[in-house]
Length: 230
Image 1 (cartoon, helix red, strand yellow):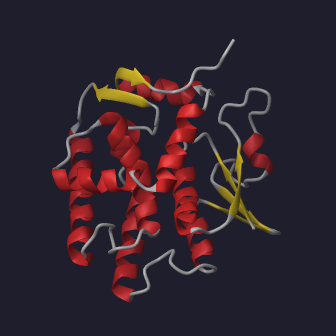
Image 2 (cartoon, rainbow, N blue to C red; image 1 turned 60 degrees about the horizontal axis):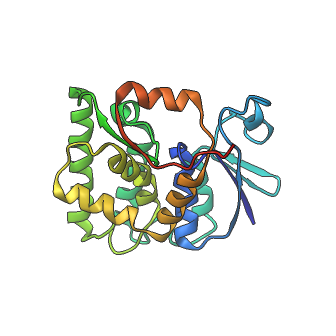
């Protein structure tokens, strides 16, 4: 069975991708959560990850780091990770790679923090461009392959790559059209996403770097996260 190392569910958008993919597709794995910002051992991630980052997948003597590499590794061993039809598979890989390497303004302005509800101080031109591209890309996939997921009726890797964006939309409510909001809601309603969200809200860890990032970009309307007891 795979061992999947992840960070805090409240913050770790990169960890969410392989986690939700394998959970939603019923691919068995053992979850190992290592919180960010461990003062006692700041290099804790380097014990299992060559880059000192998560996610990281361990399969026996094989270690695979980076969410896209993990997805391809798992896809070589399990059907359904990518679409079976060649055109849909090519589109899915392209869209996942675009998400993997792009949308920097969206990442920077809307860091993942599942338990907060935030009103952005501003929506910059760069963020508007990313949101417009997001709507165009999602609209293309939904129209081309018929929905309700990006390449048709089945959830697959490309949807997993946009799962963190769905949480960002829930947190920040950026200006998006109805179709994009419906697709985000479709992702949020998945059983695996609901499970991740519940666990994220239950976490009592706080990482100062992640907290400061979101404090800088907007006004907190609500904090739904559990609070550590005395």
